[in-house]
Amino acid sequence: MRFIRIQFLLLLLVCGVALHAQQKTVIHIERALRQEYDKRLGEDIERLIGRVVLRQDSTWFYCDSAYLNEKLRDFEAFGNVHIKVSDTLHIYGDRLKYKGESREAELFNHVKLVDDTTVLLTEYLIYYRLQHLAMYPDSGTITSGQNILMSKKGFYHSQRKEFYFSRNVELRNPEYTIKTDTMMYNTRSEIAWFYSPTYIYTDESTIYSEWGWYNTRTDQSQLEKNNRISGEGQTIEAGWLRYNRDTGYGEAYHDVMISDTANKMMITGETGRIWEDEGRSYVTGKALGISYDTEDSLFMHSDTLFLFFDKDRKAREMRAYFGTRFYRSDIQGVCDSLVYLAADSTLRMYKEPALWSGKNQLTADSIYIIIANQKLDSLIMFNSAFIISNDTLKNFNQVKGKNMVGYFVENELTKIFVDGNAQTVYWVREDDGTLIGINLSQSSTMAIKLEDKSVKEIAYFSSPQEVMYPEKDLPKEEAVLKGFKWLNPLRPTDKNDVFRRPEPQDQGEAEAKEDKETSAKTD
Image (cartoon, rainbow, N blue to C red; front, top):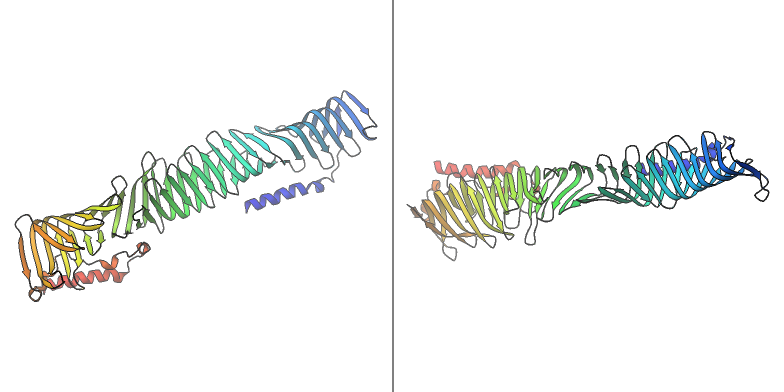
């Protein structure tokens, strides 16, 4: 893991001081306005006063005064301390303790490290020359371009141009703030790596992750553990997430969830994409859409689910494509594609839709379902509308027409208006269930009233044709209407059953039922 490698690297850098210390070099006095020995300081200590300049190897030291121990190659410097490590790397402070053998510098008070355009401020700093490593143990502030970074403890590798931060880490940018407990930051790439619970705050959203990186130059990020982006009622979660805050585009993998709490809609899947600026997102791979409320929740599955947002970033539309199945306690359905509109709470089913409500199976070329106050309100069936319900195991009540409109009360279908070529097959019974006969009727339009999920009354509006048969006299070819298809094996039975792919025998049962009834007509 990268964080473990960083810790190991830092340990080697610090512990490696003793190995490099075998290379002994002299500390040269390049300038001092006055030099004197003071026995009070020690026999081997020389006092240097006034515009002092010292050098060891290629490193230069500047100060107002210094105590130099040439035997140990150590010195202590005071006032306007300046270490010139290279043309770009300079360190400043009020006081310095330097160990020439280990090339270790300790700086105290008003310490400033400058490396090109990067500036580190702290009150105490240790710099290991041979390892190109600076360390502050108690609070530091770094300025790098537009970024200001702060932490309780930190390291800086001057060759790698990398900072390693721990404890109370904060990165401030004019457009966002990052807070975490462990971070690595590269001043060249301006990429921040984090390895612990991390929050990225912007005016529009909050990003949470426990492992990943953020490019402060391009606003691209890669989040790899327990990731979440939330803001303005929207939330995106995934096990792995790549996101560009500038363009609003994101790629998500593993347990993806995109939700809108305002309209109580969400989609989940194995893979997802988001286009925030375009107001759309999708998931695929075990895709599940949920419209949830206090009354009941709708669970929807298809190959691909889209969620569309308006300019206020509120979900306005959910679309399901290919092999759509949905379940709610009062309605269930299957179709090829489906659109759910949040504005008027309308479900629109397309291409071979089948809808079940109680005992009723409804099919048409397309079906619209309207939900009001979290309850079923009405439905519209366009072209080849057909309603079937069981009377007994072998007998079916049927209503057929060009178009139909149905109305619900307390989530139960109570009225149906049929417009165009209306036909019915209805098994009429006494209140105790005794069969009276089978009613066959035709009309251009009709209205049907239902009670207890069964046909109670039929009203005709123009030129009705009606006949009642005793059961024994019912012609076989009249028992079902043309286009009859019993699809009950395809019906989702619960929220988990929406993932079931109907087996060939399920389709076969429906087709066999249709073929059987059709052949009865032609016998």
